Amino acid sequence: MKHPPKFKAFLASVRTPNLPSVACNVFSGIAFAAVTAPITTWHAAAAITSGVCLYLAGNLLNDWHDREWDATHRPERALPQHIFQASSYLMLAIALCGAALVAAAINTRSLVIAIVIIGLILIYTKTHKVWKLAVIPMGLCRSLLPLLGFSACAAPLSTSNQPPHALVLFSISLLVHVGGLSLIARLESFAKPSPKLTLNVFYPIAVAFTTLAAHSGKNIGLNHVWPAALPYLAWSFVAIFILRKSVHSGVSMLLAGIPLIDWMFLIPLSKYAGTQLSPLVLLVPPAACILGKFLQKIVPAT
Image 1 (cartoon, rainbow, N blue to C red):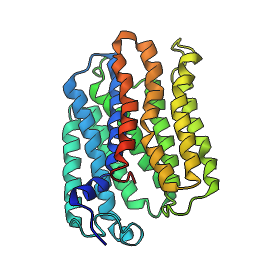
Image 2 (image 1 turned 90 degrees about the vertical axis):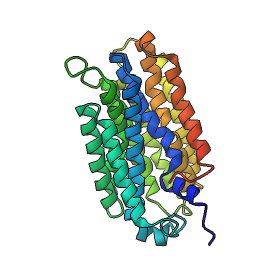
Image 3 (image 1 turned 45 degrees about the vertical axis):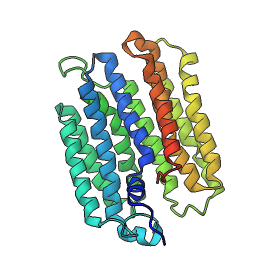
Image 4 (image 1 turned 135 degrees about the vertical axis):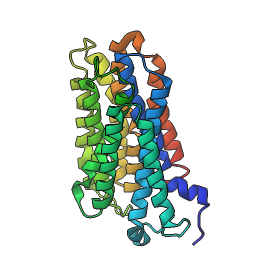
């Protein structure tokens, strides 16, 4: 078997196509914080850096832990092909966790969230091959990213220190979406699609429904809320249809569509935030979605 170039193999190991959505999730938390108080570029950059480092560390640690399983089931990955030393993945994962904590240490709240995410990464890494409910700690890792961004940039504890309920529901939406697609991805033999996977249509609807609850009481009306959910719903239903033919392609599309959840919440937020939120913020989620899908043409997202 011909080995892929080292750089490309490493990009696959860290699931590079998912990085735009990770950064976008943190960015959305920052956008919610911007509505409560002015934010600094340094705090925003530190939050995004922390989130990205945590994601990179989690993937490297996962590949290090699963190297023997991958040798049988995912031999195309870098460690089974001996492109890199397994110990190098472990050391780099530890270094990235350290960098994430340093970046998150701009305040106590964001540091605590980063520590919790590391704990969840360890739980998922240890249990995900033997425990179906391990998708919960994995989903929680993703759902805490907006809270990481918000906590790093929100007003001091003496004023607007509590995350708005819309942000909390946004995090729950991420948990449901990532948990749902992770359950699908457990059918790791991507060559065996099943028509029964169309039953998973319920979870995108559940995710979209939270948009209404998240922005209720903001006097923006249904005409501003539900249209924001349409891109996410359309993308997810197409992905679920694709699942009937290819689990790999369907899961990859669901992963690329994660920023559309951000968009679903940021569009109504921009309506009642007024001049506190730049219209350019709304360009970030679709850009992240498109970039993630493009990067999937270079290396796999799973």
